[in-house]
Picture 1: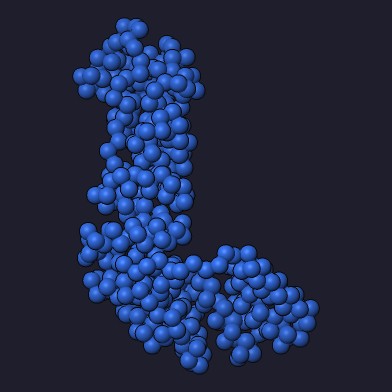
Picture 2: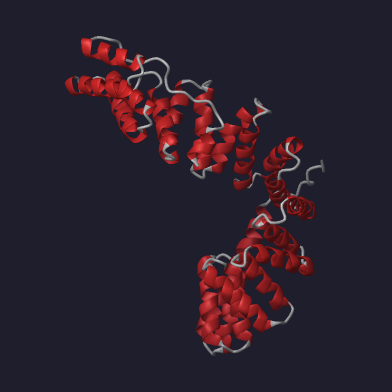
Length: 378
């Protein structure tokens, strides 16, 4: 991930060497550096720090030469030693953050980049790298905070807007994601990925019919693109348009017969149409391919319970409960199975959990502000 993220910006190492030529050895190392003889300069700086292990500036210079040779791990070690010895040396925190970033060590890059930005809040390089590091580390809300002002100041940088848009989407800031993807599509109307992501943002805003239109546009532009038909099918399934959803899932499976999600949702539709054997076949195949599809285990538990295969039903429903204990449906079905098996204590425990979860949901709903109108359509 580091390479494509770094391609979004122009970030250079500290242009000036922080060490002054206080000795002939340092002067020689600087001269070798300026001549582009980096391996020789590295060796010269190593001799300097060996003789002067308390010289923070020399360690910073060693880190700089190592970075220029793309020896980022060794460079990071040298920069950290430099900071420990002299935390006020200019540019070293930024160089350390960049060295970690280039290794894909996004979490490790965050600390020094925050320090670099704290020392100079106008440092665009540090802010950009910090925002991208947050994105790379999966800290999407923090990424939005740093990337949004940068993107607003650079409307032509579509790659940066795309990272911001995806950060907004992952942080569930759907209005932000919607605006960003709409801007991207204005400049790249034939981008299937942007249609998909705009569709996800619209769905997050509760505008599912419009989301379907965006996924349809993506499917038309790239009918063989993996997961596009599944996404369209999911939106149709969510809207209870099961005939359309079935077609979409089947289209996805024609592209990728091992798409476990498409199989799971197809099995759910087959269950809803009272075809339990066909549903079980799809659901079991889905769980063989992936073990984290909660809907498949809930549906299998329901079908097996109807068939009075209670031990197997319990196993499936317990698996669903373990995946997400906050959802009442699996608890309720599990309680019904225990009830049918004559295990009253276990059944009551599950039903009590269902009541608790419903009460918690009601409490949360009562504390939510009144609904606001949906954003105006573009």
